[in-house]
Image 1 (cartoon, helix red, strand yellow):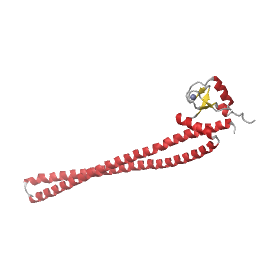
Image 2 (cartoon, helix red, strand yellow):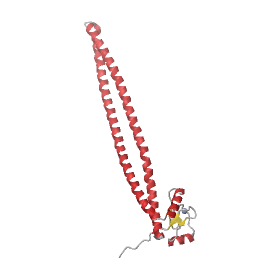
Image 3 (tube, protein in one colour):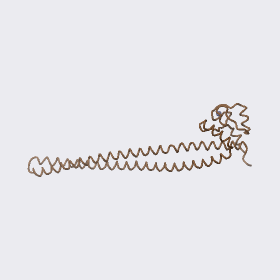
Image 4 (tube, helix red, strand yellow):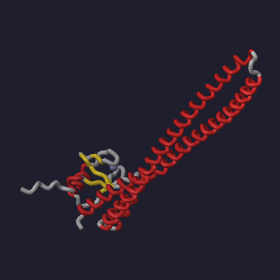
Length: 229
Ligand SMILES: [Zn+2]
């Protein structure tokens, strides 16, 4: 295998490793998002429970008021024919109306809360299902990148692969970088002219004198072939 081919394999290996790092970072974000959604559902459920408790309290209050009305009604019956009876039935009629209104309001508030809780849970459920799909996609992507990586690694001799891995660890995941217009794209520093000349030949593995990354000139490693006539 020519050095140019080894460089090409290294170049591709670098792309696979960068892509894998991106997918892995995305995969790490999934459990975080899941915890956020679950916490959100918990909050909504708590609010729903609080609303249920409040409605139960109102229901108890209503029952006690109804008992008062019943008692008043009895009194009215007992005192029928007296002057007071004219006012008292009005009072309990008004109270009764109030209770009806309160009952309807509570029912509608209860219904609304129930609806909103159901909606929030549905949205959360959809997003959780989306996360499960995303996890499966990420796992498939990582598996395919690992297979591609293993294949590329066989095209680079062990010593060069070790060199690549060592630089990658020390240089933020990027061990192989292009030189464009005499500038190393890893550290953005100028390459000495004598190294730039060597790079154009692409028959040695060179390192950037500044950042130590393996450097290459893309047109030397992958020459543009003129289209077939
Ligand atoms: Zn550099």
